[in-house]
Length: 276
Image (cartoon, rainbow, N blue to C red; front, side):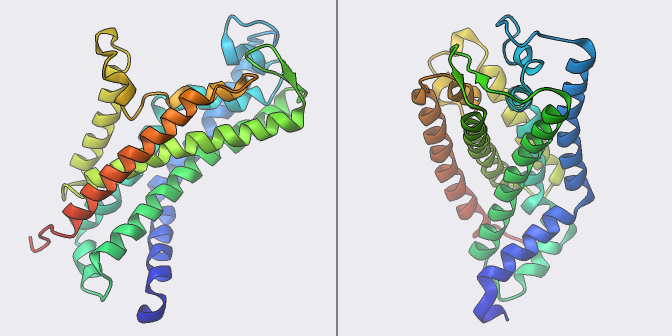
């Protein structure tokens, strides 16, 4: 099987291992619960009338359940979602190295590049799953607790519900690309150490430092180059016309970081000593 189906078999194995780990599944459950708690709290407290602008997206949820998708992503993207993705990505290589699985797998006729690609695919697919979990949970909760109707954009224009669903899909796609960038960075850090705890701390630390640096006014000169810059640019898809400048900058920034990170991960992983 390996000579003819190696490329297909290895990613399948890595995906199965990633989504069978109880911790990874528990993370997805927690991500799904957050929009539910947010929706219930808005419903119970009566936050927002759905017409004002004082509380932003949260104010719109009571008047239109679709806004729970946007509000949930806006709440979770700055920290919760990237940390969830980073935790899983950081364990891809370091976790296997710590328990000896990595040396066992590489004893097969697999090749380090192929194995790294498989782990990269698994990390990115988990990022897709994490974003989709938040989006679908928020959509279902919003539909149950609040009315679903034509959507008033942040710019004041109103678009049909069908078009708004299209915007929601685009927003989920933009967020997914940003979280895939986090997955690549986490995987790269994972190749630099044999300790899962060190990889986890390094990944979370990188995310936190980037977010803190992005909030310091004295660092405005470097902020546009931080990988976390414009993570919330998806909000510009809620305007008419759409502001594509910040969105395209964010996506190009993620792509640039991904290219550098993958190159570093490949150089490290293909040359690291696994004898110890």
